[in-house]
Amino acid sequence: MVKSKKKIVILGSGFAAVECARQLESEFGKDPGIELVMIGEDNFLLFTPMLPQVASGMIETRHIVFPIRTICKKTKFYEGRIKNVDPYGKLVTIWGTRDKRSISIHYDFLVIALGSETNFFGMADVEKNAYTMKTLNDAVMLRNRVIDMLEQAENETNPILRKSFLNFVVVGGGFAGIETAGELMDLLLDARKYYPTIHKEDLKVIVLEAMGEILPGFNKKLADFAKKKLIERGIDIQLKKAVTSFDGNEVTIKTLDETPKDSIDQSEVKSIITKTLIWTAGVTPVNTIKRSMFKTEKGKIIINNFLEVPKFPGVFAIGDCALFIDPITNRPFPPTAQIAESQAKMAAKNLISLIQNSEQEKFVYHSKGQMAIIGKRSGIATFLGVNISGFVAWLIWRNVYLSKIPTFDKKTRVFLDWVIDLFFDRDISRLKLMKREAELEYKLLDEVDDVW
Image (tube, rainbow, N blue to C red; front, side, top):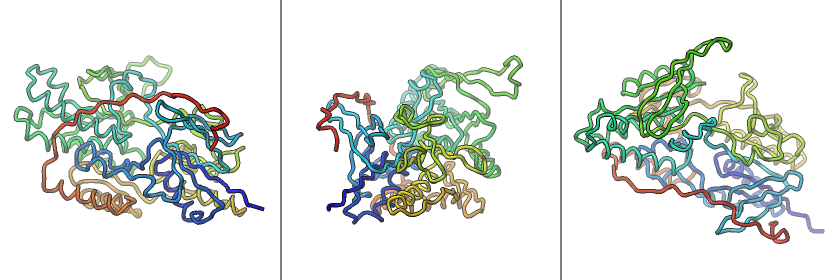
């Protein structure tokens, strides 16, 4: 009697999905009874911690993307956007487009690692007019925008319009916002020498944060050090400031105060003229998760201590799309790559245990530390329980992230980019790129031919 092959399907192509696939490959890569499948919207892993350096022109675009097929060689890969997941029929359906058919893929075990998307908190005008820092395209578009603003400002005689060109507003004081602000200021200061009429004092990078501190969750002394260094470099950090609208020319801000809820709201409202607003203020799970049959809370899939979805044995959810409460803070874990990879390892381990009929392990997160770079050769880090700031923290950041790059050729390319940046100015040529409209579903296959 021929033993039926078991199919493990992983949804996503980010840190959690790739790490889970690699763990499963090491266990089942040579097992003819197990088939590994990954479905991702992109055919590459994007190294998001280095996106701000792509936006500033320090690192070349292709050097932080890693083709899935080169790092997960024993996993069958499908490029496509997930339409829906049917946990009762154990089917995953991929959207069809004008160029490719829609297909449905059957699974025996499922790992959902679909990540998250930018959260604009219902502000349609901000979503329409702001720049984001979530994808490779975002980083390239932002770099082009910054250079375009310098070009326009150089020959602009209207002082108000010129000011709007040279004001750059970053919304969000977390890791992405602070690192983007630091890299943005580096790019502006490096490029300024080629624009004779633009002076250092003309350039304004403003960080707006709704909370009372930047880098929430970081050691307070280190966060304060980062704030001090950023201010010294000319970055304006405004706390307890929430964006209420942005029309492409002016951002409206509301000052958050400690006014009790039952009293009259007397919050101050002001505005900043700017043509460029960069939104890094939050993420939300993708719509595929929100409209799925899985039980969710705040858009995230509810999972148990084993990272498994209750009522659906063999279905695991990890990373940004899964709701796992930190027992210490009683709050959900933040959406970081470190947590996603840690969950991926445990999900793979528990999936292996499930297949081999052995006992599963509860997920317990142990932080390896936190790091952020804040501009020119300066950073902050909590590493092995020690708080470090300045040049040493910057060096640690570079070494740790260089070690995490999965392929030797890309490690070499990124390292060379960093070396080149020490000796040469950044390129200020602007590539004219157009945003491509999202593809709509084209057609569905006949049911008979649908299932793979």
